[in-house]
Amino acid sequence: MDIPENLQVGNELARFAPQGKVTLEQAIAQISRAIGYCRQAKHQRLLVDITALTGFKSPPIGARYWFVQEWAREADGQVTIAMVARPDYIDPEKFGVLVAANAGLKSNVFASEPEALDWLLEQS
Image (tube, rainbow, N blue to C red; front, top):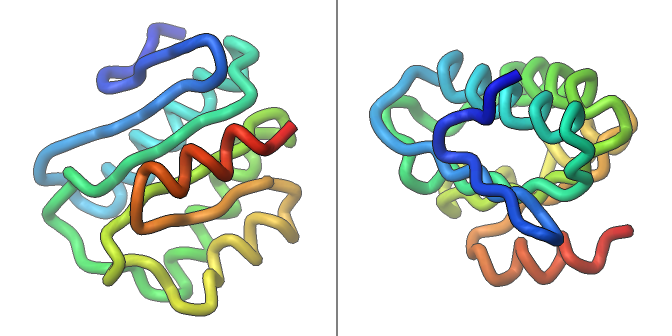
């Protein structure tokens, strides 16, 4: 698998920062591909920054359930994910984080990259 566009790989983590106007489905697919690449390449930590994506509204609960399940399958328990999103895209109850945990995906979501990076680097 070729390295996805907008994915940078470092010693401690990979950082995926897609940008541009896309549909929700396109954004989900791009993130899934980055997760799959990291799993196959044995990169255990992935920071996903979606703050530069436009073209879709904050996903409803049902969509969050669906795409988090997909990401959990793609990670297969081998990739920990910290996501950075605009505050209005973050569910106050962090529903997606709960769904991810129930599906075996260690993840969290943050409004700032420094917070996400700190959390991600603390994960084993």
